[in-house]
Amino acid sequence: QVQLVESGGGLVQTGGSLRLSCAASGTIFSIMGWYRQAPGKQRELVASIASGGSTNYAGSVKGRFTISRDNAKNTVYLQMNDLKSEDTAVYYCNARSLWLKDYWGQGTQVTVSS
Image 1 (cartoon, one colour):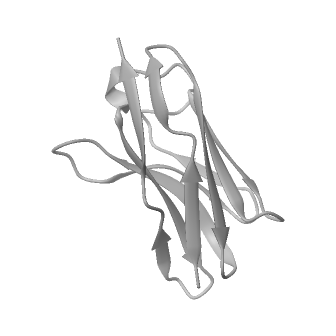
Image 2 (cartoon, rainbow, N blue to C red; image 1 turned 90 degrees about the horizontal axis):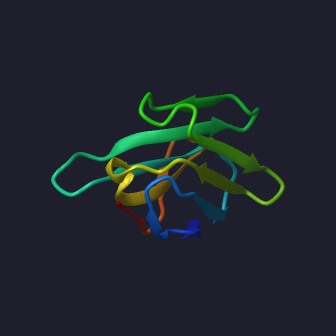
């Protein structure tokens, strides 16, 4: 059974930092990443990382967020620095299996207050 367990969300002031973690289990994943969904908006890709280490970032977070991955632990991390109010959203971990099936975490709230 595939499981994605997220942790690390919370409340932070503008300019602060948070680190999200997502531990995955149950199969082998090719691409892992983070999406977010703000109230009234569509879910959007924040960052993704392939098993070989190549990364992809949304333009709005480049230079502030860093995605990393521990393949041995099947865990993906999102280090978020210089957080802004527009980063407030529910953040979802995503993992794609070798058979191109997508799995999602339960979501973790990130709230940035000014």
